[in-house]
Image 1 (cartoon, chains in turn orange, green):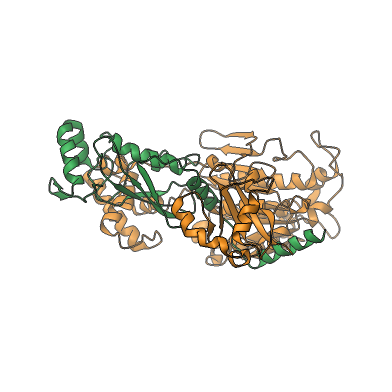
Image 2: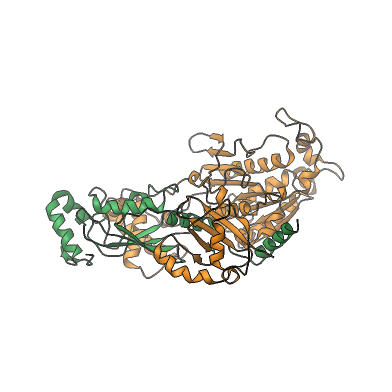
Length: 436
Length: 177
């Protein structure tokens, strides 16, 4: 056993770096594409000191890659527990781990296998953490499994950027896969195209026209979608569909089977019903491995400058991969959108000094004089409520009483405030700071 | 410098107290709602602070549905605009592309939705359904058959249904303005 351990774990004897032999070659000497101005041969410290965060569904791959690329201070967030169906590809987990938190098990496993790495797990949602938490990292590698979570972390990182503090800019490396397709992209929040700018790059959800479902189903999936969207609404409207409730899935499965029979369509099964209703796309281990490898490679290059990385403003920032018809990758620059609602010029929350004793009316008047705004008919809302809305006559009437109130009674320090004006296509986002 | 420090403190305090921020979906829907160009035949009904649920009334001033008042309930999901809003006709109406439950067959609500489209595009699309009901994408099959084979009969059925009458044993909501 001991002999095998050594063969598999070439950490080398005390004081040697046998395991890192190849890594050291990359760190210690420049390659043909290395930028000599930014690369420091033999600098291992940057990498070892960098605190990085890995999050989400590509977790196993990302964690393993980061640890074996020489990162030593890795944090990991994952809210999931281990399911038996994960074991075929999430190689850090064993049958005995089913039910435990992924982040904890993965952290313990990698710490054991790669000596000298410290992994700090957090079992929960990325949304549980605040700016203070995200501020501590050098960069963030995400393999999140939902668009919602991506948009959240994206707007968090964009919102953190403070023009006077270069450390507030945290590169975001995002990997995602769907079956045989995937992408790796690098985002420098506010400087390059962000996830919101790239929203239309996500493959649209495959949807069949409603009328096809209703009249001429051709495939078993059509019958399941019909049961899901039309039959459920007609017969069980009062019950909210829970896709994790076996009784609900069984009901849909039976409905779909009956309909398939009517139209002479074979192939409706219980697991297909589950797949269609929950929109499950099988995860392919090799796709995950390729995309995660690309992401961690970018993280490594970004910190060490050993080679050119994706995402430098004005250069390529998006690598798409597709493996379903042969193997193909294409790397390009996705351009930043000027009118992006998250990172567009007007969307960045700027601090706005407000006199807490001023009335809303006085504040509205002051907006007309601000150089970047010059808004004559502004509508103002906070995340909590609409303060004054002028875009429609009845809203104006409803919110008019607020004009006499003092700002301190309408908003609070640190709250986001959105100011728009019908006359302009852009909106302004501010963070309230009390004038002292 | 001191200001900068104070501002930092304020931001830190805000982050610590978990002050809510506008989500990307909020920003997009507010932007869409703020920049609508509604025609006289459309009317948006929305509560002041509710961007997630609102309704649109369409009052066609030409075509077979002229004189009607049709209301659609909109539900914006947190995944907007990646996902299209959920739209349902609030009344039971006789229309080839809208079923008796209020489901609407409009391409940009499902298979052709893209994040670059906005709410205005959906509003215009819905209005179009009343100007040009479409027999080749039927959701109410009987209505579609009528439209295809017996246009005059279809028109009569539309008028009867809009007045709250029966068409082929099915009773409809009165939707005359």
